[in-house]
Length: 203
Image (spheres, rainbow, N blue to C red):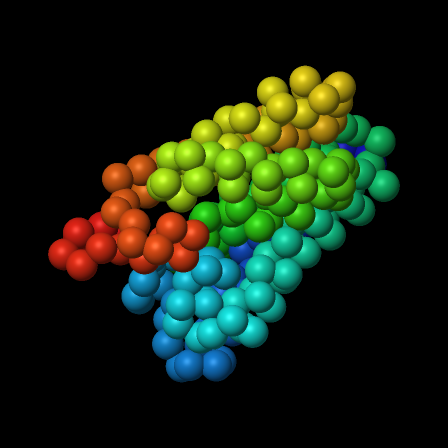
């Protein structure tokens, strides 16, 4: 029975992650598909670009929540660490490749952050700090995000964390690295809003 409940949590994680708030909110506010312009990803930053700050911040909060909620409840109810880890990973995968929108979703940062916060609240702040430091150093958001994903688990380990926190960070970090690698060669004009340079032809 516990195993079946665990599988249910993993499915819930993916289905929760698949809810594309960026797509739905941008469509409701502006009547456009957020994936048809800008970075062409269903992200909070692309929502800001196309619909404004308030909708974009709402998307960011909701994207964090859809990683946090299933992971938090899995951590409180399931006796298995692997269920917590796979629920978090499934939520991030769902955000990046959502069932409801033909598998064209976002990049997973906010949802990964929410998943991490559910088991290690300080980890959310640490991850943001690593991302900002790398983005300022590399001056390329996608590459900074790839390295942030790969750095999460080692950073948490150096801070003394073990067990489910490390496994979860490694799992969601790998998904982030894979997802952001698709934008490795994207050209940027405004760093954190990842706007393309004119004529760059980037995705």
